[in-house]
Image 1 (cartoon, rainbow, N blue to C red):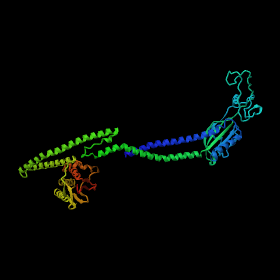
Image 2: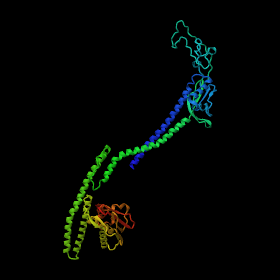
Image 3: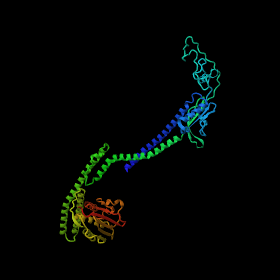
Image 4: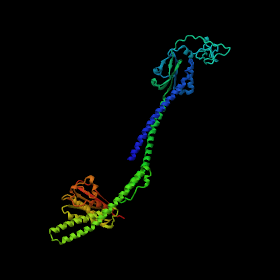
Length: 535
């Protein structure tokens, strides 16, 4: 689950960055593509604004475009030229409807009346002494031919155009011709501007650029079909790439988490094998090869050292205490037996000593159980394996129950001659503990049922009794030492609370299981399972 969370977080973060970057990249591609179209439009139209051209020039320009770009590409380019009087000089034959200069009102402005000198600089007259340049014909009154620009004359005293320079010796200063009065001129000026517009009647979408000078205004447009097709290809490629990239991110996240969590998995597997019978195991140093985990491995191993030491001390104390108590209890029981024999029959003294003998016997039983449990915890519970008739052991337990609890109803279903390989003393004690538990926690006039069943490789024993149902939370805790479900009955019900825990330890030593079945609300059932052979 932790690995999945890391992978999902990696996909979420990386995927979000990828998608945001991809969308930004697509937007940049669109801007670059539009800028490329605008530059192409500007390149085609900018060179046509410097001087006035005759009407025939624009027709030839369109033919040149048709020759250069080809028939199909030419149809994707439109041209419209108007002069300063808004007269259309030329318009492409495939010009779509709905596109005109009216779409650019905010970029249309009128020039103010120019001073005569500025007009002279823009349209200079020819030098009367020099005449028109070679290849140009002079117009009337010595003026330049229409559509041609002439070089302005130099002022007197400035043959080279620098102030203070005198004319060469023997050369008269040139005379500045008298200029006719120039009326103020109203010329339309279009600053380069580009706009995407949609033509009428489904004639597509066009990128239109408008450029202007004092001579003409040019509308140049290019069909956006190719642009949109290219953008669609980029988007399709992007949305196909995103899932693939997310899968790669998931695979990369899984690989990273696997490598990052591999030492933790090794620590977990090692920790799972450390039980009461294997406290000497330690986590290998290779699990903490990384600096971040080496400290954790060191701390865990030190904790296991302390636990092993404390556990061994507790086991040693339990075993020593149980062993040391056996001798004085045996002596005490002998003294009490002697006192009972010497007391008057039926006297108060004899009954008193008899009660003491029962308590001593109870103490001896508890000590014996604690000694067995201590050996089981230390992994030193030795089994004297013999071939044992399990059917006879269960029959004996049934007879004991009938003797000590004649008010209870008994039922049995015991398969005959069920043989197992086990320690006779320990297994009898486990079965007796289950039978005793069924008697102690039964109801008045209740039922106890014994079922013994032989299978191919195992033997099953079920011991059931009527009684108060055990809560779900206590189904596993009843096998803990000294634990009782009904604390209010602890003083009235005889026993030490070690019977079930001891029975489970004995069964587990025989490689079997002991568990509490779910059962019904009126019946409590313990199931004991043993392998037929331990070899």
